Length: 350
Ligand SMILES: NC(=O)c1ccc[n+]([C@@H]2O[C@H](COP(=O)([O-])OP(=O)(O)OC[C@H]3O[C@@H](n4cnc5c(N)ncnc54)[C@H](OP(=O)(O)O)[C@@H]3O)[C@@H](O)[C@H]2O)c1
Image 1 (cartoon, rainbow, N blue to C red):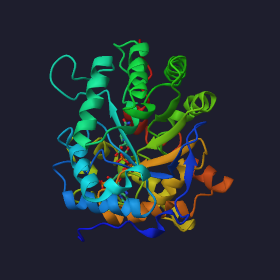
Image 2 (image 1 turned 135 degrees about the horizontal axis):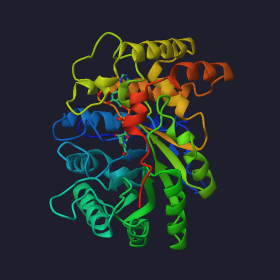
Image 3 (image 1 turned 60 degrees about the horizontal axis):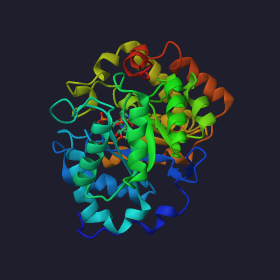
């Protein structure tokens, strides 16, 4: 790999669309890259670096992190500091970098999982230190904490915003009702709820039952995570489970989802994508972006080849009503129920 990185001059040539985030003035790339998996200490540093460069060369200006990304937890942020120092420091102002807190992170009663002020403020400071940044662009409450009053969690986000440690605040996997309440609490502190990060794909449509409407009402944007359903919405599992695929990870639910019935539906979806002149991965990303309330599709990638494939999604984003109806037949009700159950939005909170 060449040591000195000069980003592609063509990166803002119009091929990557930038989409407005809610009623803010901000835009995000239609495709953003998350560092949840494949960027930790167990992964190849050189491969992570190549993927980040490739993404940025194609206009992906948003990298999404969290305190616990790795493994081990924290290592994705530490590695990101090194990639920043090596390649991206001169481009800091071209980047939107996010982090989150809410899940288990350190030992003792304050290390999580937690939505307390103590946990969020300390975790944000830790993330900034790990990444070598003065501020993040977006800081999220990663999950609803049923044991912490919403006022306290939102108060912590507002505090971080006032302190300039984050430019924008977001929430992830909150129900429609709690999203509305969170936005109201933040508004009372003169801090807009900037964005919500929910799970959304052809196989998991939970957010269509109210959340997207609430986001539109309160003026917040939406960044959809796991638009490929962690790799299910690709052709990779058609001939068995390839080495290194996420389904081989011990913690993965994917293996349980790889029934012949599910694979048969996904093969049909693949056929629809082929008719459109796309890969299934590309169609899956275009599909979550068909609703303009979704500002960005937040993808993952394990290889540069995967990234090269998915980034082409922006070349064919339109759908005919017939295509959408056909996709619904194979991916909506009667789709992958296990997925819906295992990754639905958290509904209950005190
Ligand atoms: N807020 C939250 O609670 C939350 C939760 C989950 C994720 N996220 C965010 O969302 C990001 C993306 O999540 P995700 O990784 O689950 O997204 P995803 O895009 O649904 O899945 C990415 C995986 O799909 C496979 N893949 C990607 N492109 C492919 C291609 N072109 N062909 C074949 N396979 C392909 C790879 O799996 P293999 O490794 O099997 O090859 C890759 O690791 C995370 O990094 C994180 O930033 C947030």
